[in-house]
Image (cartoon, rainbow, N blue to C red; front, side):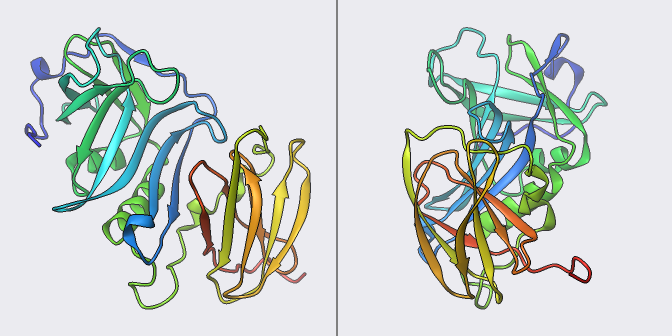
Length: 281
């Protein structure tokens, strides 16, 4: 992958007209499901509206012959270029710092998925550092309309994504999966997430990888909580669910510890959020 220096000349980033992508309700989230077989692990980073197909940035961990890397798909103006066309995608923070990356056009005339640019990035790529350092970035391909992406709040999910992608095997750190950072638990989404459709079946097995009891609660189509049972440490349960259906994971007293959302092709989910002290109950 050819990369230009981090500091860009103004002529290299011709983002004279930058539009803000529709970002109402957008959140940065990481989704991590590790397995003993790294090819069965699923690690991704998403910037979009939870429980919808509305997203601007999607990164997934890939295992290649030379090691792991991040496959990034980002919404962009394709400037009339066809799918598969090689392009350079320029990012800038508006203050003289940026990076230019090689990619290809994807999703032109597609009904679903991202229409824009796909990038193959090493896990230490300069773009990730730039995302951590700024609240907003602008980007475009040559001849394309500039688009703005909000990067405030990405640091935690990004670090979790990169850490898991660098070692996408369950148990390699000495036993159980390490707990995700607090931001990843998703309990802040309560009141915002609910089940949407019931036309895409997805059976999922939840495994309690913590050292304590965990309750499993389905959030139904009206946002109501439906008790699905509980799991002691090391236990699993299989649920016949549907894509877009969220589940809240609780401690014994019923406090939310994490929220997971069933996605297509996701056969399993590891419950990893540690217990927390919520005061005397």
